[in-house]
Image 1: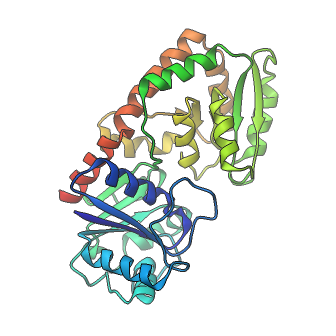
Image 2 (image 1 turned 45 degrees about the vertical axis):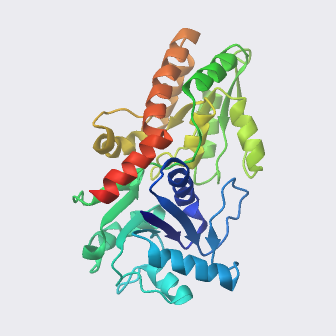
Length: 334
């Protein structure tokens, strides 16, 4: 099976991570990530093709792989196009290939904010019948019509997650005080940083046991280092948000991660048949986040370790590369 992950903008980084995972861990899937523009950030994994900057020869390679692909998964978040899907129209203009009227299994991935604003239009799009599967970022799935071909997709970053190493790292952090509570927003305003700062201040934490650190606009290598050295991570305080790449990454770095992931419980249940989430959830309410932090920051070392073990076991099961491959095969062959 050949799968093309295509998108206009750099949020295709999630699709690129999926493509890499499928290539590495499945013998019968070949996947490529084709985007229009390169990543503006220094991600480890880059798209296979960036059409606005690659050579004409590479464009021909991308076009050929699209022609050979059995499945096309395209990101669709842009300006509404009443007579077509924007991403497919853009790729048609660049490569001269009409994917909408091909014999491919077309799947949409709705990644973000414009879908929240326009979900009724997308769910009633006149060409919706041509789409084999609709995939949604976790917090968007709750807005969908819940038709049979609607499925949530985890926000994903590829790592060879190792449970034993994860617990080892967590134990080493427990032994080092003060424990760091970290918050690194992509944008402070959208992620509610001022509210988080206010809550931390009001908690009046013991400086011998806790230190709070927050950064923005720092290199990704520094982000990784800060998460490696932290025990707790606060994702965001945003009514429209649920967890994304930043929160997933903090879990990989053995952080107990607070995120408004209650939005995602329904979506997770459809995949796992269990009401489990890998994050410590809170509602979009100042008192909810404050009380949640109070509760978990007062736990004993043993209680925190037991919590980390439960989260690590869930994460190993749901985010293991083999599970990702199994998920895609079942969704795309079903």
